[in-house]
Length: 494
Ligand code: SF4
Image (cartoon, rainbow, N blue to C red; front, side, top):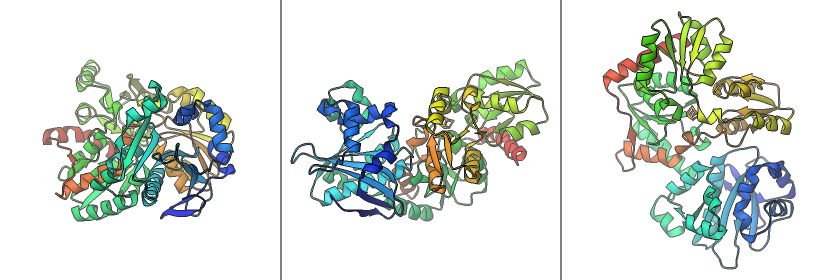
């Protein structure tokens, strides 16, 4: 494989890693704690992490036993990431690792690249390969795992690094034979099969925009919670397969009760949706009967039954202003509620302590650091972040609002203060602009539980050909009672 550029897949090119790639990819990394995390992969030679990093990325890393490759989008020169293929000892099993560039072009694509490199190594005659990646990239690990390419090999890595800290790193051994037995498809093959199964089963796929790129690419509808609610109502297919979290699939079921609605990943829930019990809200209603309850759509169906209207982050302000009541209780997100309260001072809005653990963990310091690194960039933030973080923004809005603003703006650089998939989607849509995550940790792991193989397996099951699917079952009484506030949201939200 050494020394040549190849078209790796239809959209990815593999070429030798150059010195200037190091600058493009790793600028400012030496001050980033993620460097340390990443470099633990390479800490086995007891070389100081930083020295090792600098040596690897500033020197030409290619040698007889170690190759670094840049992965670029076909037609682009800038790397979206790099892949290392390392053989630490002659005749030992090769190890494959990958790193995304700072610009976050896309984990899904890197998974695709990793799969293709693995194929190439198998073609070169290796029958077994180790692959490493950090667990903060859970989706790619699960893709590999579910494709039957991998088995978990934690003991190996713990022994190798002799450190408990390395629980942060997952390592997989890939065996050609076991891979063949199971599901040997690449990302592209999976996508093609999904498209065929979708047609065969008359299923519409709805994907939230926090889903990975390889999933949004095969979806019929992509959007934030509000857009998907409206889309779900108009779907003509017999089945809906939802790639998102549980409350979203529940909402789709309420809006299309005659259809069969499935959630692609069984355990994908939203922690915020389950923060409040209906009994607690009922008690508050009884205490103040003239106060109407506004529920963020991120709530369970049971909780919606005791609320008056739902809102999403894109529709909240419009709906709150349109309501014929001035006394409101806004649940569960107190950060979004606080933002609405500031925009709508004419209303008396009470809040409770609840919120999105993903957005609420962004800190003022992280924003300041990102702004210092990218002084020309505008900071666009989701109102689920804390008021102190929101106060630093150049634009505050829903996911859709942030995307629209960035696309229409004359500015060329943006720091994105919402789930990091949006950085990836925007970078695809506007390749001439630059998008930076406000922090690498702004990842909703619940959203990332869904993988392409989950979608494939769900459709196989819907087609009655194996696989496994998770249908949303709700009784008519619950649907009728919870749906009222969704209908009210669509009526007032327009
Ligand atoms: S980003 Fe926050 S609100 Fe959205 S699904 Fe994840 S935890 Fe729930």
